[in-house]
Image (tube, rainbow, N blue to C red; front, side, top):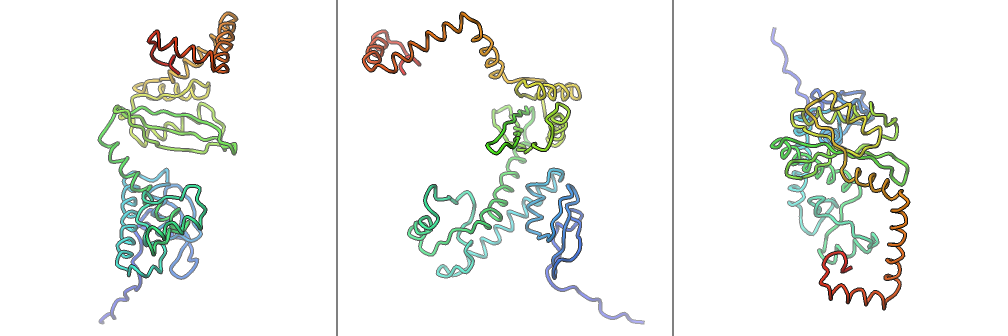
Length: 311
């Protein structure tokens, strides 16, 4: 018995994101399905391959490094393809208003110029130019640039070792608790590894040490030699927990923070308070009197005093 011809599916081939990286859900529209990240379990009601690729390249914290790097190349390749296609279009016809903007690093927001005035300036400098839309700038261009930077940073970090992890936290004007985790190299370069909003969690030593430990595992324990932060009780406790788990990592606190604390204790002494008060009186006198300030400058020049005294 002869079998009939096998059916060949028509249309675009499935994107690489569906190969073990995304869980395909129910069909939402023709050719479009819901999606769930296989690593962090983030859900999309309608999973577009471009958005899913950008997630794996730039945003998924649990995605393996090799997978992130692979999709970072795909994001950059897709942007390059769009630029190549746009370059073939007639210079006098721009049906797609994103074609002239080739990269986010070449884009400027116009400073304080109003949106309409900024567009007029763009067209005066280059007739036919249309700035990218907010969606294109915030989506395609930003994701491609982020992928490019991440890939470059990863390549540079692979060649080095003996890193120091620095961390600090602060509260923004909206009351969110933001924490930055920075990687310091022996050549004194700084790389922002992670910027986290930890407002939903209690900042205990145990919790912070868990966040730090995740970063250490991602970079590689063999490449970390020290961890440095201020000496707040919870952060100091987190540093201690890390060094207890990894004895090869040196526990360091900010020298500047130590000096600041020491200075704060010193100025509480009565004799020092009196000295500072009198110094402030002298400073205000010379700042408020133009004649006295002139005499002071002449005396400084006559004595050849260099440095801060000249100001």
